[in-house]
Length: 97
Image (cartoon, rainbow, N blue to C red):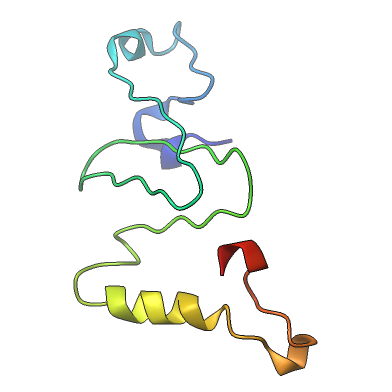
């Protein structure tokens, strides 16, 4: 189940309006993010994301912040370096590198 970790107790992709009638009043921004694009949610915004295709990378401010973002970028780039232990394939799909 994708209940946003229990926050609000609403399945945002299939809400039960009988159990959560106030959800009918919720504002929703709906869009599709295409390859090479990104979406940014400001801190403390209640949100839900549904992956429509792969490969996809999702990062959270729980993982990336002002102090570590360069390390995260370096680690992601390292996943695109051919790995001799894995027939020189990259850990990320080629389309992401």
